[in-house]
Image (cartoon, rainbow, N blue to C red; front, side, top):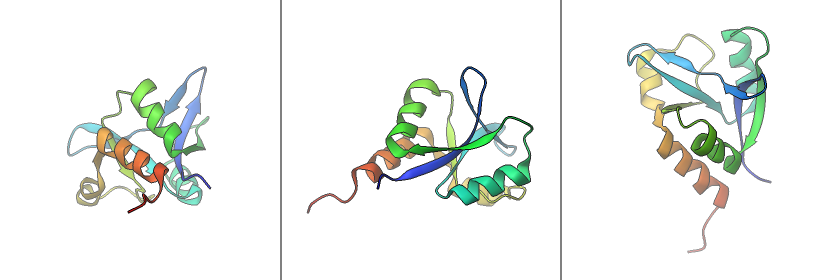
Length: 114
C-alpha cells in the first residue's frame, strides 16, 4: 500500500489548495493530514465555503504537486487540530515546503536495507 496524505482542495479548472493563516508570522500554511477523517473534521469545523473537499494524494503525487504546480506554498502544517490554532502549537509543527517534500519522498521509499 502506498502512503497517502489528505489535502483540502477546490477544483475550478485548476486545483486550489486550502491555506490557513499564520497570523503571528503574517504568512499562510498548507494543512496536510495523514488521516482522511482528520481532514474531513477540519473541513467541517473551518467551513471555508462551498466547493472545498478532501482529496487523497499519494506521497509522490503531493511532492510533485508542491514542486511543480504550487511552488508558492512556503509552509506546511501537518495534522492541525480542527479548532482555532494556538500559535505556539502551530509553529512547533510547522515545516518548510522543502523539508516536507523530502519527508514525503523518504516515506514513499519505505525502509531502506541496512
